[in-house]
Each structure stands twice: as C-alpha cells, then as structure tokens.
Image (cartoon, rainbow, N blue to C red; front, top):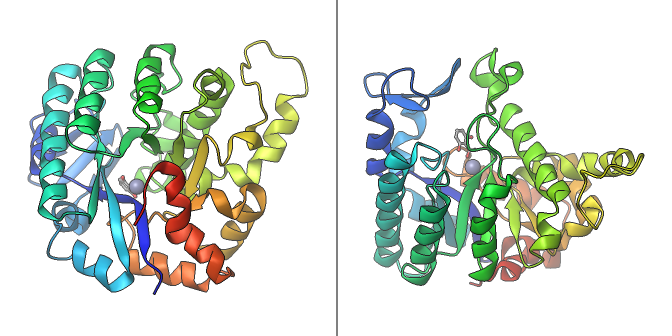
Length: 334
Ligand code: GRE
Ligand code: ZN
C-alpha cells in the first residue's frame, strides 16, 4: 500500500465549541447547546450530531482509520473556525485551539501535523500567533477561510502582513471554504449555502480576487492550497482568462495568467469530490504535479476518498504523487 499524507482533516477542540456556545443567539456564528446546532449566518445552520464525536476524537477512530488506509500523516485543521469572531473572542479562542492541537501533535508524534488558526481581524495578533505556532509548535500550515465576514475578503490590503509572514516562515496556507454572506446562496438553507455550492463559489471568488490583486506577484513564494479539486477553477479558468484579457482593466494587478500560478503558488487537494470526470478535468487542466490528497474528514469519509482515488484512472507513479510525493513541494514528507 502506498503511504499517504492527508492535507485536509478537521478537528474541534472543546474550547472552540465553548467559544461558539458562549455567543448570544442571533450573534452569528453561534452554537446552541441544546440542539447541538451551529448557526453560521441567518438561515444557515448545521446540526453537529453526526460529526461531533469524530471532530473531537483523535485516538479512538481517526488514527485507526488512518492506519487502515496507509495515511501516515494528517494535517489537522479547525474548520470552519473561530478565526473571524471579534478579536476579544477570537484571540483567546485561537490560542486555546492551537495549544490543544499542539498537545495532540506531541501525543502522537509524526502522525498529526498542526495547522494554525489565527484571529484574523486583529492582524498584529494574527501574525504573532502564527510565528508562535510555527516556531514553538512546529505547525506547517495556516488554515484560513474564504471570507472573514461580509465584504471582508482575504485579498483585502489589511491582511497582507499575514500572507507575507506565511511566505517568510516557509509554510503554506489552506484557503478553506466557509459560508458566503450573499443571501442568494443562503435563502434555501444549508443545502445550497453549504459545501456543495455556496462554500465553493465563495472560495473560487476569493482565490480569483487574490490573483487579480497581484498577491502572488508581490509575494512570489506564497503557497496556497485549495480543496475540492480547486473549487471548479480547473473547469472554468480558460473561460475566465479569456474574458479577463478581453478589455484592458487597470484594477487587474496579476502579471501572469490564472493558469500560470498552479504548481508554484496554487495547489489543489482531492477533498470532497468523488467524480472521475472532475479528476480527469483537473489533471488535464492543471497537471498531476499540483494535486495532493485531502480527505476532508469527518465531513467526508477517509475510506470513500481513498476507494475513489484507487478507482481513478491513474498510474502507480501518479498515485504516488497525489498520495505523498507532491506534498514535498509544501515541505511535507513521510
Ligand atoms: C468541510 O470542511 O467540508 C465542512 C465544514 C463545515 C461544514 C461542512 C463541511 O468545514 O463539509
Ligand atoms: Zn474541509
């Protein structure tokens, strides 16, 4: 069995649950303890029953499943997080979650790699916490989200110091989807708002905004990973590129084409998609060298993800790249 590194594997620390439960009803996001439900934005809520145990567990189920599937290492991240709560709440909540995750990485040496969650609305505190997580805890990634509130997006100039610090520390960021603030996606509740569509479109828009803002030209060493086979970009980028270059647009700061950032600045994982046509489109659009394993556990099953990848039309050499060799580009080795 080929050994594997999983780049998208989620957890909650009980302190993060408590931070969300401490919030008032109507003060989004908040968690109602009696119903075990997170309310993300108006009209969009998600009962946690199905995932609650798995998010909090490491030893009992997660590690056993990893062993069965040859997943040697998993990068563990908190999602969707507590990172864009008001700083008075997010600073202590992120510190507690990072500390708890550090303890897990120490308890199971070599099996779990840490990902920092940062109080992003206080940029100075976020930079400080990131340095602490990388230098003192040995974390390998920043888990960030596709937006930090209505009209607060990762490409906004105010967040540049955090992105610069990511590159300076030699780690990478995972641009993880979260709920959109557009009523258009949310008025039909969780189904359309959530990972199937609303999350995807929000994340696709955010990475495109980052590219257009020129962030990858300003910070050439910046590495960002997208889940879900690139949030539909492999399918759409040729058309986007075509229309982006249609008329001169001084707001567009990127020096290269969208497709030229794959493999140096932008990578994708396999998370949450079990479509063979989607795999084939992604491979032919961006190349096998930019695709890495992500299971999205526990929101998806690790077993299903690996069974699906085993069924994809790949050579053994391609499987080795997806399962672990490509992760070396992000500094992760078995
Ligand atoms: C995910 O990571 O895919 C996810 C979340 C939260 C809710 C549903 C979901 O982070 O699929
Ligand atoms: Zn996820």
